[in-house]
Length: 276
Length: 324
Image (cartoon, each protein chain N blue to C red):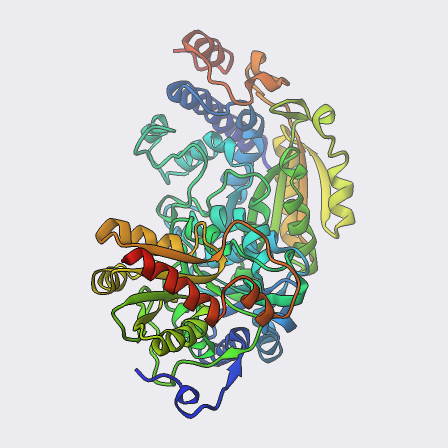
């Protein structure tokens, strides 16, 4: 079933709020990573609002879905979506990266607010997600495990160890969404270390793999719907624009890990349609 | 607690601690359906194979990919139902996968038991690439990780059976070589608790792993020279038994530590931290002092690096000269 036009508009509003939250959180923290999560906001919104079976009511259900943010530095958007789902109070977002906050600079496993795993070191997330998928099978639950990765994350060798074993164990209940934005800290991904065609790579490892426009909510929803009916794990290569939604942040490595100042925040909020 | 009959009767029984691990796993498999075992293409050597044959649905071979194995173990354990035993050689389990043990297992404090075999010099002929001499240092540096170095097969089995109920990450260091069984069947393992195997007041020899048997023999050599050494099995290196170490420092006035491992960050450091905090006394640390090992039969290596009974007795006498 495809998303209705009305539902797509609602999701666009949520994704816009996620972007507003991201720039506001990173501004308040005076440090952090705004670019990546801005680019991921559309697919994270579709995943969290339409597919990931996680909410305040089923938090302790062993059979619920699991999520691992493999590219842990993009957690501002993850936290914003946990707030959108009512798992953390919205006002808590502005404690991000501050002493004593539950919202650490990279995610720390906190079951009571739905953070299933600790990440931050690239390359480690997909293995953990595969372990959860293996466990869901051992425990006889229908849980699906979702993991994010990125083009930069794919430069880590452990990703390909995990890809090998997830296919070997035929973990059909595992889906990775790869944020492919062509940007990493030191510049353009193709200049720093070109990972080339990730769809072809995942296919060669035995996965179902597909390329998707990472800002097309309908296409993302359809891709995520299809992952539930496969016999092998699925990799969705989401082609995104880093910093999406704020002109000066788009398609540049300079906003990978820099916080906007007061003036830049005002410009960003105005562009996102949330000036105030 | 009794020492194993062989010491009394002169009959020597030799069993590798890795073999005891395999037996303990097999027993656990029958008792508990939440025990899952991971290996990385070394199941014949690490002795997890018997579990895999008996419980194929709960055994997973990851091939030669230790980092992914540890990360996957953490993910599985995060669901809160299974206890994962993950095995490889100590070199690879703690060397290649150190970061995964830190980030994925210990940061979220998950129920993964790393049982690593082929640790230390007694790997023997495979030489320096396979003689892991830094694993105790690497493991005890990480918060939440408990570090156990069983003295013999009796203790290895007891420690593995205990580990399944110890919350969070545990590292158990096991050996390839068959070594003397020194503990009697009535031995009870308790995390964080050392054991005085031989009383004495001239000095205390604190040892772990295969060096405990060598320390007992060294104490006999010293006794023949009129020196009465206390021998302590400090099988839990972290958390160290501060009370027992402090009592030994106070009552003996000198402490010698012995380990088939680098002295930097190993048992010697753990004991020294307790001693300087509570009761500073002269100490010597027998072990590898900033060099790699080499190929050779295990016993020849222990002799060469001063880690057999004669070498330990010699170090004890040096220490007593400092004690004055």
